[in-house]
Image (cartoon, rainbow, N blue to C red; front, side):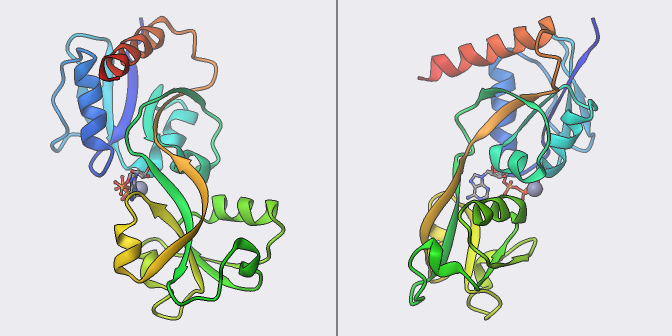
Length: 210
Ligand code: ATP
Ligand code: ZN
C-alpha cells in the first residue's frame, strides 16, 4: 500500500503537541532537525515538517495526505479539505480588540474604522455577514501594536490567554472564531485503510487523556 504523508508544523506552537500525539500513537520517528521529511519506521508513513500556513494547501493539492493545523489557518486559506478529527490542543480565539480608552464598544461601531489583522479573509467574511464597512489593513505580524501607533482603530487577532492584549493596553470586545488543532485529510481519501487506522489510534490516545 502507498506510504502516507502527514504534514505537521516544523516549529512553533503546534509542533511539540503534534509530535507527541503521533508518538503516543505508537509511531517511531526522528523529530525534525534539519531534514524536512522523517520516515516512520513501524508504519507506512512519512512526516513532512512545514510552516503551518502551507499545510492546508499541501493537503488540498495531494502533496500530503493528512495534516495537523489550526482551524484558523484552514479558514483563512479557504481550502477544500476534510476535517477528520479535532485534536484538543492549540486552542485559541480570533477576537476583535480595541485600546482600553477607545469609544468602540460593539461591532457596529466599526463602521468606517480601520482594523489591522493577519486574517483578512476571515475578518472580511465576518464584516460582510454583519453589514459592516470597515477598512481592513493586512499586516503580517505584531498586529497588537498598530492601534498605539495610530495605524488602526481596532485589531482582529488570535488570543489565547489575553496576556498580549493586556500588555499592549488592548481589550477584546467580540469573539469571531474559536479554533483548535485539527487533523485534516485530502477530500476523497477518507476510506483509505491506513488513514482509518491512524484516526483510530489518534482517537484512542485522545480518549485515554479524558
Ligand atoms: P509558522 O512558522 O509555522 O508559520 P506561526 O508563527 O504562524 O508559525 P504559531 O505562532 O506557532 O504560528 O501558531 C500556530 C498555531 O497555534 C496558530 O495558527 C493557532 O492555531 C495556534 N495558537 C494557539 N494559541 C495561539 C496564540 N496565543 N497565538 C498564536 N497562535 C496560537
Ligand atoms: Zn504561520
